[in-house]
Image (cartoon, rainbow, N blue to C red):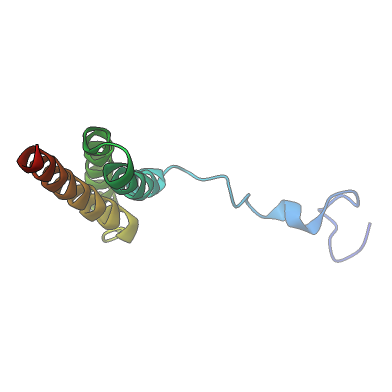
Length: 107
């Protein structure tokens, strides 16, 4: 073994000393889920069905609200992904209402 890394076996990589970049502790998974669901909900509202978009938007808003409150409790301020998920969820609901109203008016 070398003198500079006496506690590290010779077969280990220097990268083994660091935590895995994908080994999350779950702090921001709700915020990310909120953002992803908000984006997908908005796309589904436009392209497929406003009713399915509303369901996805409801999940986006719920996950975003819980992520924001969790971030505030832990003293991290607010997470931008959670806020974006909430906003996209609300936009998806409003766009869905407008699409349903437009279809009802044309029928």
